[in-house]
Length: 280
Image (cartoon, rainbow, N blue to C red; front, side, top):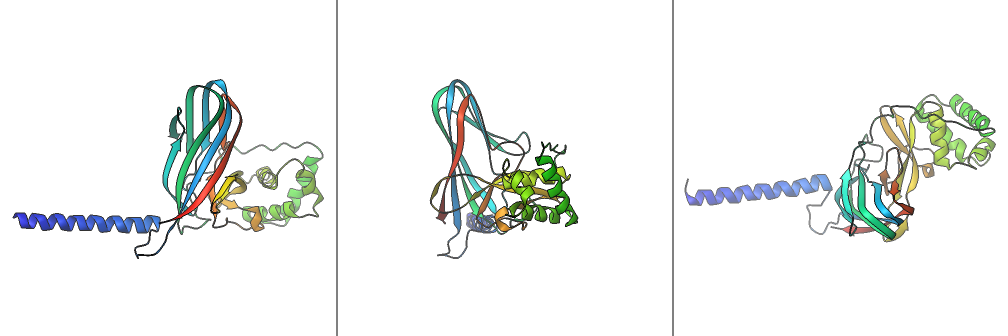
């Protein structure tokens, strides 16, 4: 083959590779192909603060995993003097920072970029299977009687796990329900719905979402109800009056058992979030 043919073959191969990469970015990340079209990208920063006790320190933060409605573009941890690793021993990713010895106020950072997609907020995603062991719910009186009455009423008005969830959410949000008012003295509305569902043998857990608003700082995660229905975990936002699904601007950050943040060798720990909308 002549050098001229080799040259045109190489040029053709490069054009095909470039076109394939362009289409892949458009298909997976919704990056527009037409000039002057903008695609939104959310930059989210998690800031962890705690006071180290002068000993070996380990901080563990739950990380988003295939969040509904969003693709993860990049991740980055910035914490001078700490080792960082991304692990998923339990099937759900966590970021872990470690240091042989630390004392005084400590600040750790985790940053990630997210691109919205069209998969929807109720898709079947990688949220795992049902819990292996049902959660045992224990109440003390008079909460036990109130919970039994509340659950009995909701059960008689429902026929499926989805309808039971809706009835419980409506009961918990009703200002005239005395049983719910008694239970809400010790539990948040989301926690109460999760406990009542588990009491009725419907697998449920708390999920944590972040409301995305441009140029917001010092934001906290908002609790959501995650219910195992028809072979998949389904999210409920109590602000949507018991309807299945979440709002478009909700980024699911934590969707697994266990706490969002754990710190060993430290105290007074908290995690706060900042976010910024960018265009590409």
